[in-house]
Amino acid sequence: MPRAPFQVLVVPFRRVGDQVEFAVLRRENMNVWQAVAGGGEAGESPEEAAAREAREELGLDRPVPLYPLQITASIPAQFFAERDSWPPGTYVVREHSFAIDLTDVKIKISPEHTAVKWLDYQAAHAMLRFDSNRTALGELHERLLAADLPLPVD
Picture 1 (cartoon, rainbow, N blue to C red):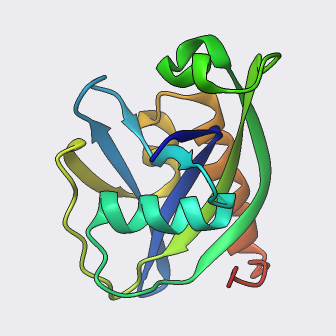
Picture 2 (picture 1 turned 180 degrees about the vertical axis):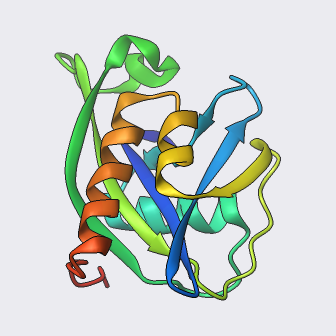
């Protein structure tokens, strides 16, 4: 299916007793640590793309609540091979961010990743390569501290 001109980012978290841990994944083709990330497919909404990417990259076998975050980022379209198939004038691709609660959910990372680590906020923040990932993680951390997760998307 053709790629749509938007990107999604999904920050996995889980509750372990009184603590919260965040998953960071090492991307196989870039050897960097990041959250779940990928492109939308033609006809998908950002929410649908985020749910699909989470299923694919984390090996989820059941639906899991997905929470929209406020953070958005922009990625230059020139970094995407699919750029030539997008409408003329597409210079920037918007990245939509979400969180996913994986408390008591088993995961199996896809071949896109070589490792996963569950870390506290400070350690996860230090490992993430991209600013948008660190900002999304920070928003999620603040929301969890304030018990202010938005309603999950349907």
